Image (cartoon, rainbow, N blue to C red; front, top):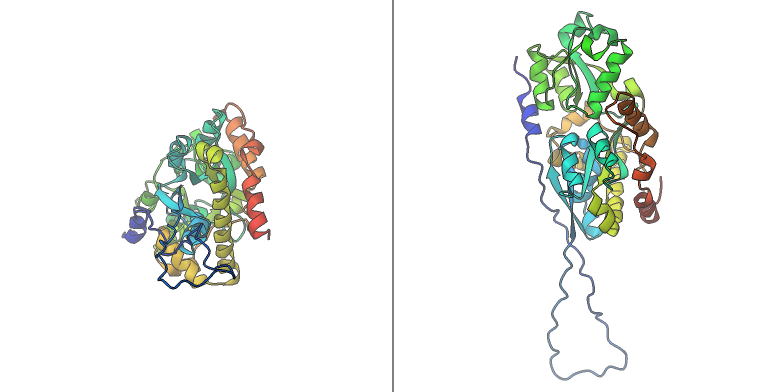
Length: 367
């Protein structure tokens, strides 16, 4: 069976982006007016050199080529970062779990990553990273993450409930990731243990071929692969994350130790631009405002290159004020603690620095 080859190729696309073609107003320019008492000069005025433009401050932002980073992508294209003297430089990763070491080592300044066990373990070592804003979430009607099942199993009725997963081969994606936890929670709902199923870790790009050749029976997937699998008759969207667990915090904006400690003012401005981008996204998909333009930005920066997919697929949700669903994060963390993956819970209220959002509200207000 031919699997949607273009969808696989998309995940391998380079994610670096060029700076938007905006201009920055020079600061510190000399006033052009003259005092009323100034006498006219009879000689040609001496030429004045223009004040040099201040170069924008670069913020290295780690992300996968996913719609979940819509706020940054829109902020880049609409010049929101440039207006505040920032240059958002995209540093591409294939997934959130791979970003953790780069954030901890200050190789990037900020990231949109998930609250998997790797990040929480790093925080438990007292690395002063900070959560600053909502990165993406699943809520009813706005969710780009789902549990899918091989179409053959669904059509035959062999899989309908979590208890039907006994003896099946499941793909929980990356070890220690949030999706890994979600899959384990699904089998627990069926009264099963991990030993009752077979685990096969397959990347997002390889999941549809694995489902097609029966190497995997059930998997968590992201868009556009969920819709691709349905379109190709490979898989069926069983339940999305919101169906399973209600409101979940999929990813969050995290600042590296040095960026949080030494570049606080840049961090505040970054959240202002980011929040403007998020609100443009919500206006586009909730109210239709500038929808075509916003879809064009997302097809430029994300792995989804077909604009018509935005009419059919699930898309991530965001909080209009950038607030984290901190209670959902605490629940996810406690699951890791209860199963011995983490020795102790991290004080997430301390890690979540609301000062950045408070500053953004002083500039753009709340909704």
